[in-house]
Every structure is written in C-alpha cells, then in structure tokens.
Length: 283
Image 1 (cartoon, rainbow, N blue to C red):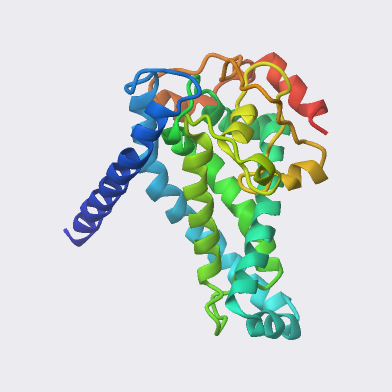
Image 2: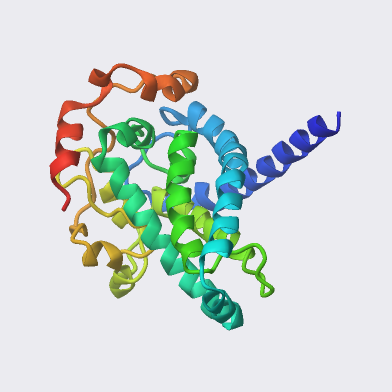
C-alpha cells in the first residue's frame, strides 16, 4: 500500500511538471515554430508514455551503478585528490562536474551512433519525425541509462561525485542531470530561435535539430549543452538554414511497447545507410 502511494504521488508530481512544461512551451512553439504541425502531432501518445516511464525507471536503474561508482572511486582514488576536490568552492566543483559530465555524455552519445548495437536503442529517440519539447524524453530507457552512466563516470573519476564528500559532492550528479534534462526540453523544442555568438558557447534548438536531421550531414552535434566540444572533436555542424526533415531510414513501429522491443529485433531492422555511415563517418 505504501509503495502504491509513493507511485501515485510520483505520477502526480510528474503530471504537474508536465503541465508546467506545456504552459511554457506550447505558446512558444505556436508563435515561434520552425515547422508548423498539429499540437496532437504524430507519435505524441508514445512520447507521453516515455515522459512518465523515463522520469522514473532510468533513475531507479542508475542508483545501483552510481552507488558502485561512488564506492569504487572512494576506495581507488588517492585521498589527496578527494580532499582537494572537497576543499574547492561548490561553484567550482559544480562547473568542473558539469564540463566533465558533458564530455562523458558527448562520447557516450557518439558511441550510440557509431556502434550498431547501441544504435538499436538510440534509434528510438531519433525515429521522431517531428520535433518539439516532448521528444526530449522519447528514448529507450536502456539508452538513457547508458548515456547518463557515461556522463557520471568522469565526475566520479575526478572525485566530484562521491557520496561521502563533506561538501555535498553527492548532489553534483543530480544537479548535472537536472540541468541536462531541463536544457534537453529546450533544444528539442520547435523554436526558431538564434543566440548569435552565444551559439558557440551553448547549444540551441537549431544546433540540436541538425543532430536529428534525416538528410544532409548526419552524425554530428553530439553535445547536449556545450557545442564547442563538437568543434574540438570535429563533429560540429550548424548551417544557416534549418533541417527539412527528421527521423531515421528504418521503419519504427508506432506503438510504445513495440518500440521498447525494437532493439531486440533482427539485425536487418537497422537502417542500412545509418548503420554503415555510423561506423565510418562523423569523425
């Protein structure tokens, strides 16, 4: 009974947050849309399901590897490193943790495009043919767990995420994940906004929309918030125009349950062009 109450309260909390997101983004996407489409667009049903599923399940799964990472790094890392990071002001720790997490996420995201097995799971996210803020949570839970784990590893390796830190180190992974999630809603949004010179420093909807393009230069723009990482690693792409179409070459089943089972299907389920391209290009 107690567990059922916890679940119901979690669903209520998520519903309230969803209402806030709709109130914020629905008017913006109406007045500043890149591509006009109906509010009840194609695929919105499964995306609502992913919103609730991925707000609960990945965090539960991640609690185990996060605990292992915290324990392992505390045992393995030199005590002097842990003491030094613990002595830093929290804002410096937060900045270092944010950059370290973004570097880890970049490579995890890039591997998800380059390694066919990982692409099977990540393709669920890229199968969206119309982008808006809700597409941020359209992802296979295991794909989300993988990308978040990749983001956590550098933070823990640098001694920035240890749960025994006296300066609140255990809050950093949560803070970085929260910032990344909030920004993820923004960069997926159907917003024709430009930040000018700031686009060199922070990601924008245009930057990430080009990551979802179905044609043109694919397998680029892997960063979630720091586009200059893509410049450093040679995967930056930001034309003046916007992408004309989004999605993947493979046929993704419309039902959410079938999409969750999609990565377990036969190898030929992968889009031939995408899998071949991911192995060799985008370098």
